[in-house]
Each structure stands twice: as structure tokens, then as C-alpha cells.
Image 1 (cartoon, rainbow, N blue to C red):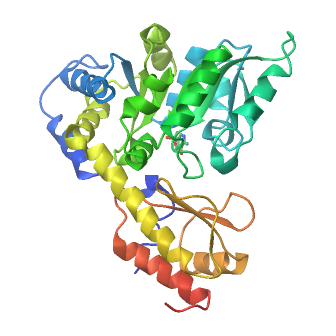
Image 2 (tube, rainbow, N blue to C red):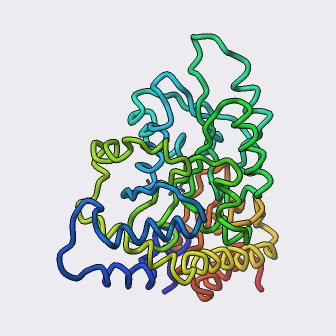
Length: 347
Ligand SMILES: *Cc1c(COP(=O)(O)O)cnc(C)c1O
């Protein structure tokens, strides 16, 4: 039977061997709790090495918590956060950023292919400067974006310069940061702190870990009292070593990049094969591990009836097909073969 769940999301995949192995290695004896342990120290140190800067790191359970607590730490309740209209913090976090910041307002701006249009952002934040409008405080970029595209280093640089010019902090939602770095082949510092990113929510789960994201403060002074914020929000793991150790497993030997490269390559393969089917249209450039296609609704319905799971929440007729570290070539063949057969085109 085909692996019908394989393309629904990258978080449908299990734990990759490097992360699993590191968790098993941490499972010996007694160590201090709440992060005061050698596994956590090692993971933080490897993140500093990876970015080549002396950043402050916190591990939390998921991306919603990472984004929400990060934004809350950068804002007062009367501030606003500017993000893309399709950003996860706006559409998929159930109001958690507003909740944890006691009411900070999210303002959205448009932009092609999931990337913020800085001219539109400028309009949004300069059209008002009176006391009745929530004061713009943070610019948020999602890297890779919700539409599977990737901001280039030059684009992040431009966002950094824009943020500096307007007195905004720059936060990056990096739930798929590994896919972005793998896609660009750049140094992770080049699309973060060197480009002016103040804070990165570095995703672990979609890269192949069981659980956990790292909140990385590139300006240490911004991290003051963040530990209390995590604790109050229920995001301080008592057995922190198991949240931290997988990071060491992924960062050593570059496994985080290898796993993301595989996912990206699978998305390329899938896109290349779908491109050949007349009824299927690629909606956005495939730069990370997502393939968005538009197909006739009847075709989508038939695929769902066969058992294929995928989400189609972007526009009418759009379907999101996600690849992960665990995607195999045979899964791609099975999906493409079903789509091809259903669309009356045989390859
Ligand atoms: C998955 C995802 C997150 C994190 O979601 P959680 O389910 O809270 O871990 C954050 N941002 C983006 C863009 C995502 O795709």
C-alpha cells in the first residue's frame, strides 16, 4: 500500500536516526534538571559554533511557543508585529503571540510568493504615527516561507536594513530554517545575525527531531529574564537533556543540513515529475521542501478518496505536498503515478 500520509506534512515523519541516537545517549544516569546539565551545555555550545557567534539559546517544546515567547520578549503590549499575511504566527497559532504578549497586535502585509514586500510594510508602518495606532516594533520573516520559497541572503539583508531604519527588531520564524540553509548553501550566520536578525526561532521537529525548537538570541541583552517567561508559560522542560541532546546529534556531522537537503531534493524530484502532467500546475518556485500545485478539484477529490492526505488551504484548488527527511523515492513514484493516472495522462 502506498504511504498515503507521506506528503501531508514534514511533521508526519518520525525521528531521524541522529536525533534518536543522541536522545538514547543522553539516557544514562542522573544529571541536574531544568537545563543545568552537560547535554544542554553541549547543545548550546554547538549552536554558537554553528552560527559563529556568542548567542543565547533556550529550548522550548514547539514552534508556537518559540514564536510567541520570542515576540512577547521583544514587545510591550501596545506594540505591533508586522508579518506576511500567510505567516504562521498570524494564521496558525491560535492567537498565542497576542496572548503571551498581553495583546500585542499583529499587522499583516502582502508579498509575492510568501515573502514580505518591504514597500508594503513601509506603507503599513508609516501611514500612522499617532498614539491611537499600535506602535510597530518587530518585523517577522518566515524562513523558509509558508509557500516553500526562501529569502536570499540579499533579501534578508534588505529586511535587516529596513528594520534598522525604522527602529524595528527583526525576528525570524525558522520552523524550516534548515531547509532554507540547505537550499541556499550559505552560512547560517549570513541569513541571520550578519543580516541583522535579532532573534531566530530555530526549528527542530520538522528537520527530524521528536520535539523542540531553539530560541536563539543574537543580542544577549534581549534575552534578559527570558528564562522566567519560558517557565511561566510551561515551556521549561525539567528533563531538559532530552530536548537538548538531539540538537547535538543533528548539528554534529552536519546532519541537520544533510536531512534538509534530502527533503529539498525530494521536493525537486516531485516537482519535476508533476510538471510533466498537463492538469497539474506548480504554483510557486520550489526552493525548500514544499511543492504547491493547483489541480482540478475533481482530481484532488479523487486523490483524497484513494487515501492520499494533503492539505489544500491555499486558494482554490491548491494542494500542498511536503517532503521530509523520511521521504523515499518510491513514495514519490506512487503519488505521481496516481495523479498521472487520475488525470488521464499515462507516463
Ligand atoms: C510548523 C511551523 C511552526 C511551528 O508549529 P508548532 O506546531 O507550534 O510546532 C512555526 N512556523 C511555521 C512557519 C511552521 O510551519
